[in-house]
Image 1 (cartoon, rainbow, N blue to C red):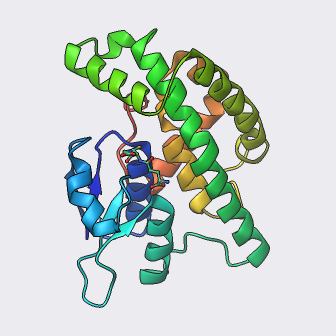
Image 2: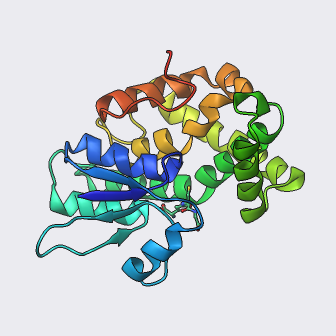
Length: 226
Ligand SMILES: N[C@@H](CCC(=O)N[C@@H](CS)C(=O)NCC(=O)O)C(=O)O
């Protein structure tokens, strides 16, 4: 299998975690932001976001776009170990959490991360090239003071909701790892670079480390030394 990705994308990390959990061997191709659309639009029928998985297996789809659809594909292609609980109610909770993390907290973490990298955290890489990329991302997603403030509030509410399920136990749903844990570990990983989140949500980073270990995926930036 070949995973088309941006090396730093937290949605691509989400797909890698699932592949690692299932112990499926795969290769990655890192695409250049902007130029990536030339490659993926013809494969996806017009979608422009990464990750995109190319199974490269006879009888399987040529391309699967969207990290959630990649989860569904992997679950049907390689059911063991499962990415969702067997209990139907728990399973629907896992998918609901996964969707919430994708559509809400994953986007909010992107907003606060790029705001941090262009301000207080500029010293992480003050090079002109890095700051130009960060400014381009901020323009693309309309990341500004007002939208970041909303993202911070959304994260505060969301992390409080996660705390109830995740602070004192390893799994968000049921008694084993699921799509919810993988989505949370990937999509909240950008926060590992931000000192205030590290200080206020230390339990979150314990969980992130555990999920990365279980999925055999290198730790995200900010957690490598832990
Ligand atoms: N819902 C999508 C979101 C993926 C996403 O937002 N990817 C970003 C990188 S983190 C992207 O490809 N942006 C480029 C673009 O929108 O053209 C998924 O889960 O795969």
